[in-house]
Structure formats: structure tokens, C-alpha cells
Image (cartoon, helix red, strand yellow):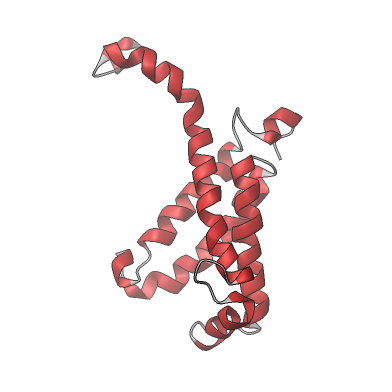
Length: 152
């Protein structure tokens, strides 16, 4: 970063100190925010209904066949994929799986308009963009992938 690119050049030392940690913060937050959604589907935690009831919802309300299998798959991507994303382990595959899940969620919400408060696609679209970022960038400097010397 050059001083001329900053509106407040006096903040350059602070920016330089925290910039390496911004990808880490985003990756950990994204992963950990996915985990409870998976726990709802897989274990019925956090007010969730577990795989059978979630599967019934997926079948009856969303038209999926074999809803329980879909619930377990979606919950696994969110729970286990979220943990992997937070850790920066198998970051790209975990983010890719979450991206596929979120692309499906996006299609489910498209008919409700944009705003999430109306059941729209705003939230899944934001999450899709975020997970696609990690598909492209990988885990970053402070990831287990990088520590292993492997960017999957």
C-alpha cells in the first residue's frame, strides 16, 4: 500500500499490521457461521429438527426426493465443511462444497425476491460470493493448508 492510496495516511502502520489477518478472520467467521446450520440439520441442535424432520421439510416444501439424505448431505457440508473452512484445511474443496450448497439455496429463494427479510436470495447470494472467494484464493497465509505446503 502506498501512502498516496490512503485517505488517512497516518493509519498506514495499523493497516499494515492487520491486513495479513483479514483473510484469516473472514475464513474463520465464514466457517464457524456455517457450523451451527449443519448442527441443526444433523443433530437437532440450536433449535434445529435433525435429519428426519429436516428431510421431511425438504421433501414436502422444497420438492426434494429422499429429503433425509439431502438433509444429511447439506448438514455435513455446513458442519464438517464449515469446520474445515475455519481451520483452513482442504479449504478449496470445503468452500466448493459450500458453494454448491449455497447455489442450491439461492435457487430455492429466488422466487421470494431479493430481501432476506422476505425469504429472498440476499443472504444465500452473499454467502455464495464469500465461499467462492475461498475457492479461488484458498486458505491464505494462516491456514493448515499453507502450513502443510499444499493448496488443494
